[in-house]
Image (cartoon, rainbow over all chains, first blue to last red; front, side, top):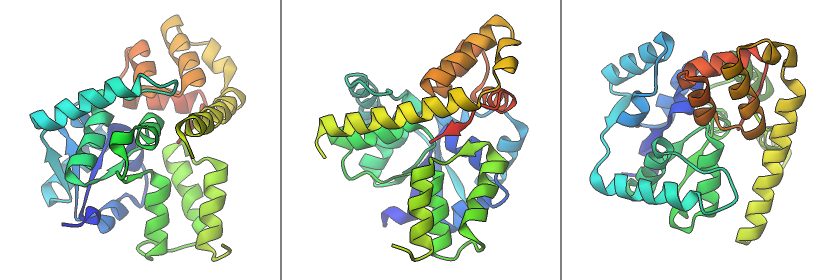
Length: 180
Length: 77
């Protein structure tokens, strides 16, 4: 199965994404998005639970039960991330990264520590880690959602309270407008 | 890019995000909060670490996310 078929999502991503009016784009991009049990335990709000429960019911989301080998790698990653002078990661993100490495899933996260770890730790080389920025960009590129790209990103920022780094957003907008 | 360059680049990105959080935060709101929440919000402004900040506040991540909105602190990733 290709990496594009499966993704695994962390807590911050799901919380943000649940607030976005076009959130079901996620299920047009991936056949199944796994949610670790440790991530589900962190969800508390009715809005997010309702979305997760209905998506689990439809099969768009699937529960990911951590196996001993994934947990072992995740614990190693947590420790390794603390060795560098960057923000470390905690176990829920580490489980997603470990699954990305061992199962070839795309890791979707809104946790900067996870992005740093994937960039810096050698054992995570080759793991694909996407933020909302990359997911929405892919949705626009493949015309799974339509509209002026800037308006789509602004709408996401309004709905979720998230802020895209301006430089990254400008790069993406230039590419989507064919200016690169 | 070697490891040191990568770490330096992340440091710069972290500093940019920190400056934006400091600049856009509603400091009157932050200072009006009870001590625990005030400390958690200031910790978040400086670090961007939502999990630890929510633990300091004794809140779930989602509850803390709402508090960040009220404090007009942007979440930048």
